[in-house]
Length: 116
Image (cartoon, rainbow, N blue to C red; front, side, top):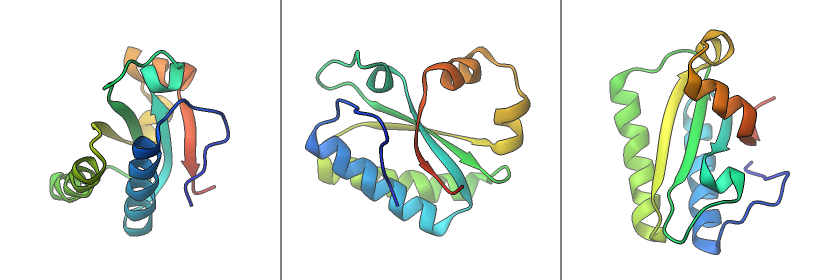
């Protein structure tokens, strides 16, 4: 179940969209963690800023699964008038890759859901 352990300045629509996305996606797919990153996690977002989330998956997921998950996200975006940017990375890649992007997510991201 979706829960935030730290106060994050999200409005009602953003909270509602995130809760729906996370609950639906994690109940259907092998997701290990969901991390909020970017301006929402840093507390520096402006009105209309997107919600950046990173899904950490058990293994790499195929393109068709990404499209299905993107459709789920899109439906929540439409019904809540928000913009969500989602990225998928395997648990192994998240742990082992040294990209600048992943290092930043590890540093400033907030785990908002975890299977563990």
